[in-house]
Image 1: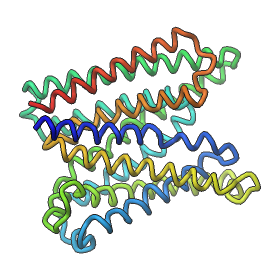
Image 2: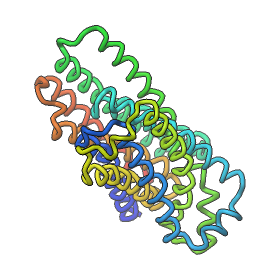
Image 3: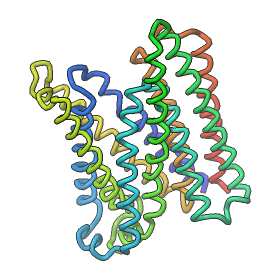
Image 4: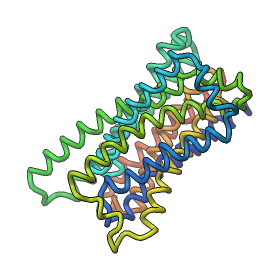
Length: 341
């Protein structure tokens, strides 16, 4: 049991490392606008990679989809659509507020909503148990850690923008609203995983390996998410006249590779999260979700430092960030322990 928990936790933590890294290549593509980078990411990570993986790992995929429970299919598709909206808002929110602060606000909401709602709906009997208490304590630590990291990010923002005008405050408030909505909608990705159990069971009956049973769910979820993401990107490309950026002299093969890498990193994090959550057992999608979010934020903060977002920040702001990370590490330990019961 302990070995299975350790393996599942390790897989989810690695998924968090990947998830916290996927937007970093965008910072190295200054000649492209957001919509250029996000469209390449969407095509690669939300359409091509999921279906290619599902075709390879899920036997008789077409027959599986035709025979799967209609209710489970509808849930997965609708949650995928909601996550697609959240994904667009996520990209805009991170661009508006920065990697560290944007991640902090969004992941705090995602971690809480994405874990507690499935627990309350699917496993209400587990709430008032030792395992349930430990899980909720871990989620509280996650939220505290994320809030402290967000405070650190906001302090850094103020220090870096001391001479900006009042108009920047409106920009911050707009970014804050975008991030809150992004958190609510983005949590639906875990809803698709946890409430799409019927589709996973159907995949097992077709001979799919247990660790790969979620791949059919990801293919459907991310496809409806792709429709929203790609649709919004096309709208912006048309509105802003930025189609030409794809072929501009400054746009090299490195840009296309960077956008593709974003998609592959993001999708790989979903795959590995699904594998780890399944390894963790019946509550894997509930226990694993805040672990994924915590590790993603720690990784994103680390990238923020490495890419210069914290250049010029005060020692006090750094201290806030470190305290937040300590809370997140404590949360990882507590939540991991909760699944041993």
